[in-house]
Length: 465
Image 1: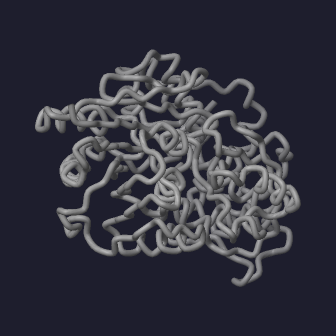
Image 2 (image 1 turned 180 degrees about the vertical axis):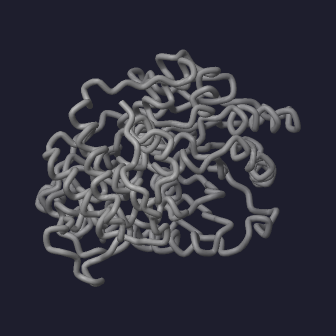
């Protein structure tokens, strides 16, 4: 069923969602703090803001409202294409011409109707209508109410149908069609669908724990009402179940007993051929998770040099290393080209800038900002970083290359190009424990497929013949 927007009003495209500090709206038109702030955040994201930045803003919300805010912002951003598809079917061609404030209110309402069963339908519709009023779009309030209530009565009948099978899949799981088509050339359709599903799931939080302090961390955090689950591999990894008492409020965090780090980089760290007393270089190190992991691997008598091209990112790196208290880490406060040729390492790790298609669940807004050109945008930089790093290896050293990308051009193709220039290197085989079917072995390295637990990515380890 298609419905046209009611009335012939000329919407004010410059309107904004009001806050409690602005002119007080009619009490009957009130909006809960979480939905009001979610609308403002989504509006900012549509105008170019990053989702991580808008969610870092201090809003003074109680924990329950903060949780709903994050759910709404991440959910509406991930599911934007699917939401717009259904809304367009009920608004006809006029939907694309609606002002952003109206689209935002409609997306928020529809997301709650389709995905948040605990939210009463009347509340989702009522507050979306009030958001429209607070944006100064009173004449569109009736239209908003009619569209959402109509979809609510027909939501069990909703279907998705694109131009072809892959386009339908892209709409169903709210991804750009060009991304789905690329992945369909790499993996079977069933596996592509698993990845698409994973990209729409919030991932759990994982902790990387200082070796030898696992039991201490479990005990300390339990006192803070933080519940953790054991993870079989890697051995120093813990999975967060809940954190009612505040994860970062206790001594365990301040003492540097653990860091927050996704499971995938922890697994990559566990696979690396490096041990105690060795020297490592984390080439693109900020914010410092890999640096910390490497430092724990080489021990107090080892050494890790951490570098990063961005001065701002290096500031974050310094703060994180200082909190963990790692004396074996040296932060190189210059461009990596200035590292002395005499500096040699047992292992150099290039975690290269990339398109980020393996982290679309965490960076929910990224899927709508990427285009095909982004896949090869970092190619020269990726190859250059590898070239610089290889010159600082001991003869028997290891060169590690990783990305958070799923794309051939940023992964296998980069390794192939490097090996062509440096035939003295070969791919070092990494052994993955059983039970990890999401880690795909290839001739040039390992591809980590995203799951509902963790991000995706790629890693390759090279060594001289």
